[in-house]
Length: 285
Image 1 (cartoon, rainbow, N blue to C red):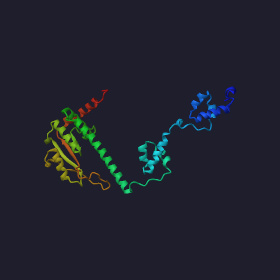
Image 2 (tube, rainbow, N blue to C red; image 1 turned 30 degrees about the vertical axis):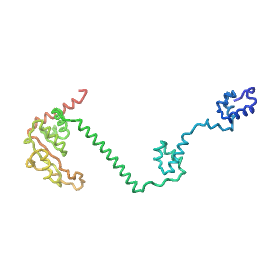
Image 3 (cartoon, helix red, strand yellow; image 1 turned 45 degrees about the vertical axis):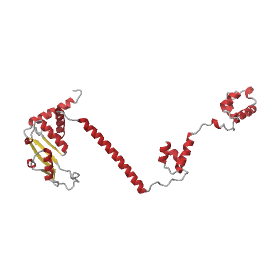
Image 4 (cartoon, rainbow, N blue to C red; image 1 turned 180 degrees about the horizontal axis):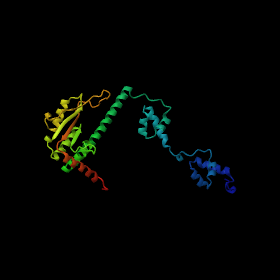
């Protein structure tokens, strides 16, 4: 930019004044106002080569972080520990301390594995406790069931797990099989609600041939509240040598089959109630 000759003709005189003011500790703004210079390019040329006073320098926060990062590294801290304390990125830490020697490991490999396993065990325990607490809260929120609620629960359970009538196979009777003792308990309670007594029920165990059939029958008989002699002959599942069985634990007791005699009317009520539940759950119905 071309300067005004009359105003900036004596450049060297202005420069001497500007340098003198700079050395007195004035900022560029103060020199500009003192000498009435409105052109920043001219102003910078006047003080060229003269360092700014310290008080005008903006402090660089990263300089302090860099210094502290180096101090921590010399103390033997890891990148993670330095990052945790200073809150800066690992890439910055690496740049600041890469010339420093790597600290000696605080733990042996065996100690490190032990600490890691202990940490994982603590984490698993905390997560398991959280899961159990969620289940406890949900269980307590249910409370006692009314007869209507039990009826609806039983209908839903039967439709999910029980034998159903088909157009190609007429089976209008209650025929239920399951391996979960809690499911069996709920189903038996539902049958009681419907007025079905134990003498109308036929029990049979369906189990793998390698299992303890007698023990399984004794367990299910105790759960159902009947004598084991009331059980029909067990259905044994033949062993397939190509199949790797997973249900070989001590708690394996096969499935309990419960058949209700003279239950055609009960079955029809159950099926009708099921479709009532479906319609009742549909807000557009």
